[in-house]
Length: 380
Image: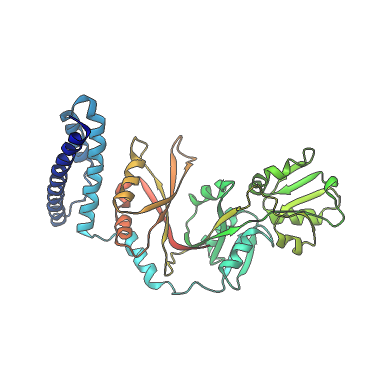
C-alpha cells in the first residue's frame, strides 16, 4: 500500500469511530437519565476501574497502555457529557451565581486596602492604579495582609504573585494554602528599579545594597558592578529605601521605586537597572467574600490531586474537552504531605460561559480537594 491508500483506510476507520463514539455518548445520555431518576452520582469509580481492566485485556499487548489512556479520556468525556445533561447545581455554582447577582456593577473607587511594606512599595503603586482614592494600611508581612482580610480589618488586600523575570512569589502561594480569601481583580505593573542613596553618596562609596530578594534577582546583571558590596535582602523595596534614608552611616544604597526617591528624599544614581526592560509584576486584589464584577474572564483555582499516574492529565483533559484555555499552572509542595503537591491554575474563561459553570460543578470528581479562589478581570 502507498501513503494515499493508508490515508484512505484511516479515513474509513475514522468515519466508523465517530459513528461508534456518537452511539456510545447516546447510551451515556441514557445512563445519565437513569442516574438522575435514581439519585445516583455521575462518577462510579469502581465501575471505571473494572472497565479499564477489561479493555486492557482486550487490547494487543503492545497497545494496552494506549488503550487505557484512550478509555480514560472517554470516561472523562462521558462524565462531562452526563453532567451537562443533568445540569445539577452545587454549593459552589450557587455561590458563584449569587456573587454575580449581588456584586456592584462597578469596581469601587475607594476602600480600605492592606499592602505589605511601607509607603512607596510597589504594592501601593498597584493599589493606586486599581482604586482612585484608596485608604492604604501597611503591614510588615504578606501573612499579615491575608490576616487583615480574613479578620475584616480591611476590605481588600493587594499582593504580588509573579514577576516576568524572577517568577512566582513562592511565599504568597504558600500563604494561599492557609488562608480563606477570594481574588476580585488583578493588575500587571511595569516595574522600574532604581539605585537610591542618601544625598552626597557616590557609586564608589557603596558598600551595602538593600532590597527585596525578588528585586535583587531582577537586577543581577547590574549588581555585578559592585563585586565588593554586601547584598542584603529585606522585606520590601520601600523598606530598603527607608532603611537607607534613616541610616546614620554612609555607603548604603537601596534598589527601589522612583516614588521612594521622592518620599524618602534620596538621590538616584541609576535608573531602570533591572536586567529586562519589560519587567512586569502581577498583583492580585483579594477580599474576604466572593465579589464577581462584570467582565470577569479569568478564574483561579487550587487543587490537591490524587498521588497517582494520570491525575493531572485528567484535569487538563477536562479543560480541553470544555474548550477552556489554561494560562497558568503552578505546583507547590504541601508541608504536611511528603512529596505531594498543591496545583494552582489560572483559567481563561468568561464567568458567564456555560462551560465555566459546568466545570465548577464537576470539580469535586476531578480531585481530592479544591479551592475556588475567584473569578475576575485583569487590568493591564
